[in-house]
Amino acid sequence: MPLHSVLDRRWVEASYFRDAYRAPLRDKRATLPDIFLGIFAHMPWWMKSVLIVRNLVATWCRLDAPSAAEVLHVRAKDSYRVGEKIGLWPIFHLDENELVVGRNNKHLDFRLSLVKLIEGENASIVVSTVCSVHNLYGKIYLFFIVPFHERGVQRLITNALAPGRI
Image (cartoon, rainbow, N blue to C red; front, side):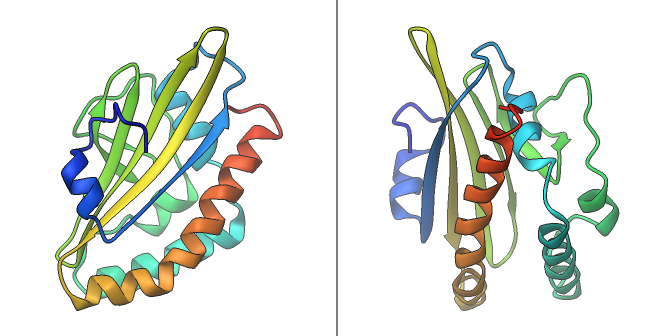
């Protein structure tokens, strides 16, 4: 996790799960919404299918989850603000250096942070996930999801790098 993230350091350190992946950026002028969509708006069909099933189960459990239509048809907008959705998730923070999206549910809260790092002529993006669980259901959920999450995020970043979307 980048030290200058807006995520509360104590919350991150106390979290039940956290990870971070860093990748080079092709264009250091790219906006965080463009980078986010370059990574997360291009999910393979199998990943969309898994998300739709997961969201159906979450909805059945009375948790807030995106609809199948939102998973299948990510819509890009010209601009974004805190409180709006980008892709599948509500925006908690947005400035020129960091975008934080996430969701709060009764079993767990999660945040996905994208931090843009500029070092001279080089730029990179750090994609971090932080999950805080509230009960046993949150722990059980993460037990099953974390292996898919880790491989999935890495795959999405790799797939965004190859065609130059990020």
